[in-house]
Amino acid sequence: MVLKNLLATIFVFLSPLLYSGTIQTQGTGRVIGTICNEKIIGDKLFICEYGTQVCRMVTFDPRIVVDNLVRTLDPQELKVGWYVEAEIDSTNHLKRIKINQGKTIICFLSSIEKESNNIKNLLENIRGIKSVEINTKFSQANIEYDQFTISYDEIVETIKDANFEIE
Picture (cartoon, rainbow, N blue to C red):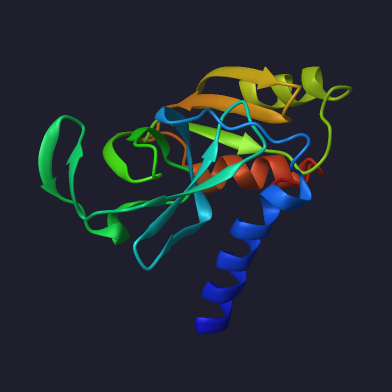
């Protein structure tokens, strides 16, 4: 567990150096994305930003404004793939978070420009998917779905079964 946490932290700090010419973040203020696979390490939360190639690490305070209510948020309540709108300050400290369990952003590991129509058709034909927006520039799919009909894990499995590699 310690090694996994150390490797994830090293990855987060070195990634911008490796991709410094191409990475753009949404900046401070409002960040839209999903909870990353790394999720939480100590007091750090990882958000994969929509419209960028960044998995942003933000400092997480359990006593936070969630969906306009001040309450204590147990990190275990956050699930990988949940869509979030977060407010962060200039030091990457999370100030407020809005969670939407019926939306997600899927990040593909390679360019989807040539396959965007196939991906869109695949997703739109899944029972429970309400809408799909494909971002070919950053190889992402922004998906709105009925979480009572289909789960995030089922969406991921369908995409993988169609031989697409995702994060």
